[in-house]
Length: 436
Image 1 (spheres, rainbow, N blue to C red):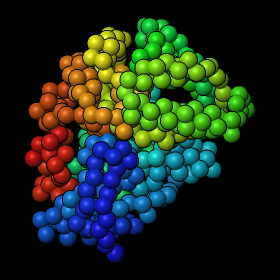
Image 2 (image 1 turned 30 degrees about the vertical axis):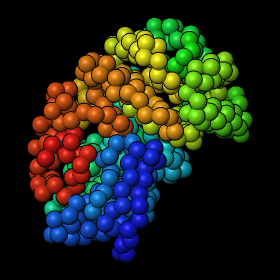
Image 3 (image 1 turned 180 degrees about the horizontal axis):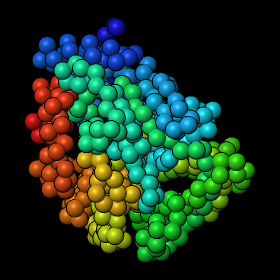
Image 4 (image 1 turned 90 degrees about the vertical axis):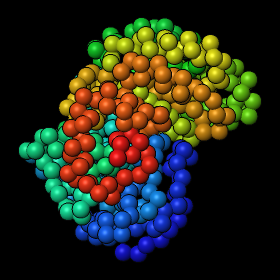
């Protein structure tokens, strides 16, 4: 292994560090050697994938492990639909790996730049009242603990897996992950602009009656864009605008024009409401059918910062209405839409949907916007509703706060004590959210 040291910045430009050294690894033996050396030196180690988290979970001041080379399938069993992939595998590479097996991920978020280990360790999720986050698809994993031991955890040890499947990087460095996949499927996508009151008022019914449903509300307007997906057999013919047309529409409108409008609003915030109304008026309905991953994922090229909170699903309409009122009252100039989704309850200790069917509200700001208190004031509304912040996104919660909204918080800390007694995997952010 060769080591280097180079400055590192995450995608959202919210975190930056120059590690003492950067070590590329290719397998569990490489990882174990780095961890044992770090432990002997009293240093800390953090693995990094694509850097798509907005929080400081992956910031490495001492040793940064680069998992780029740890990619691809280790083992696949089409009969059981279980596929083991190396931890550095990017989500956007998975469809091509799974397609020859006739398999797919049960659900995905709308961004696929992340590594599978980073996405699952931070609680990445999609939408769908009956579908859990990506970490709920894990049925086994291998990690290197803080003592340098390589440990395999399977679903025969449910309690440990419920900690390690969404472990925040606090328990060890993941080297491979076994996923429970499903037969490949297609999705029908129906997108249409509606009045925001209809989007909010109909949200609970829509998530109850559709496979996947979400909406985006554009502040300073009365317009929301609803997105509803229906699962179909894999051999359903593609319909509607083709990939090239959708790509052009998304690049020109969702990225090109939208990015230019955000930049203009950042330079002159007073323009933002007018630009938002222009963007809202340009929205149009469309319907198409394609392979599941082609529908779930959107191309996001306009750089932003994000905060997202999970609250009990039934509280979503009132919470969105309260945020909508506050934006008007405080006069914030917000160019990015608010995204509203849902997910099934699960059993993972630190999942944002642990023990309850969950609704998600995500706030975004263009990376060039001037700092204000938009995130922190909205955070107060959501935390007061037993809100749980997305681990990979921006928030101000500490271990004392989080213990009150996670019934199994101390159970997770007990597993952490066993797997990383010397806190080899700690950093400032992790200490803040979990304690020492």
